[in-house]
Image (cartoon, rainbow over all chains, first blue to last red; front, side, top):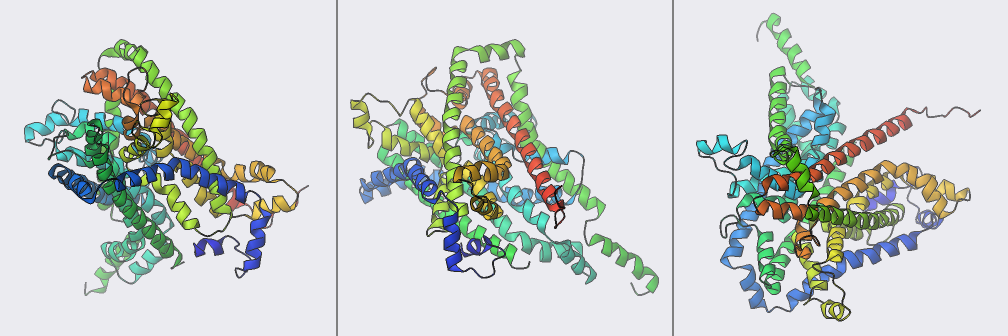
Length: 295
Length: 301
């Protein structure tokens, strides 16, 4: 945050503490906006969040442990994390490729393609879910060609991966794209004049400069995939032990009025989400330092 | 490579290759990118509309005229009309507090604002059940006063507010941080009130970012499935939003009707993308215009 502090008054020389304090007084509304922010944040986020934590504390350790390590729940962790990891890796590769094509090449309809990349952000997950299922089911546009070849994707764990690839696609593209746009061609020209091949330049000059952005996009896609529900449940088949994701376990427990069990599994997911959020924050801080350093 | 005659052409080729790839590499990369986008984005989108009209336009219109479909559409609109303005006011307030001032715990507050993005929608729904449900914190009190939140419209609105909570704030915070305080301070020094400064100085500067945040927030609010599904109770004609209506029809093997309802949401997504792109192009054009201004501005006449 110290970087933000110094960047606010750009031409003032050193960050004089007295001046900063006066600047704060010049603009009105600090108390009102911060007060409202904290009030609204508490009602919408913090109170419900603490309800979840308090409910967990009402369980004994053994109850909690039994609920979160039941074989069916463990199988769901494996599927959720495994499928999310594979999907995020696929998005890492193809997201970089799409960002590269959008930044470096010109082709007709580029603006439309660029806009279309955000479709997974805008298309409701349930719609994506039924549509992907319709495509990949045995009588679907793709499924009718794949199934005779012995490739069945719908109602299998592979279908979960497909849905999660769709959901996570924009993250890597949108984090890498601005960094590629800002990258200096002079460095590549210098490397060329020193005799590097294009492939060497990519590995040794371009890739290191976009690594923080790539990692950030990857972590975001992974985090999003872990919590995803709507697009997955239609295509997964939802067979216990095989193709049942963790959020569905929570829903199942809720439908049986097992609030304690649902809460226990939810807390596990929440802790993982928090950890990933911290990782993403650290990656973004790294990215900012990285972007600031060579300039 | 030894004779001087043959060394020049490869060197030249390599110099050209310094800033771009060989044509065949370019074509390969473009083809892979297009194939991937076609498979994962264009085909699913097209499938929605093709499936929706698979039984003809009359069946399409009939499935949308169904009373349950109508009430789902109405509930979706009501939810968005309440949730988006709430998060709009919050987003502007939070961005003003975080971007315009320095205070302790700012980084932590920013993380908290982002938090709903990383919570699974299903977990979000569960949290509200634990607060307002029959066995929840306020459950007995709500029951005594005959107020229904879970399995009713207020629960759906609350869950939607939660999942769309960060959209507008997140869009505005970096934008307002990048713009700094100089213009606002000048306005205040010249005697403007806080509100005047906001309306006439800040708002014109952030309008495209604000629009971008609002339409993304709206798309998510209308399309949210997981969180709403937990708190809704799936009462037909009463607590079904369009996404939940789609799910019910789909599970009843009424595929064409399910896709007809889904096509409304797909249309919403397309409109969202168009508005978003226009907002981006406009803000780029304005930034470009600002950059193109000569450093010393001409004297006004």
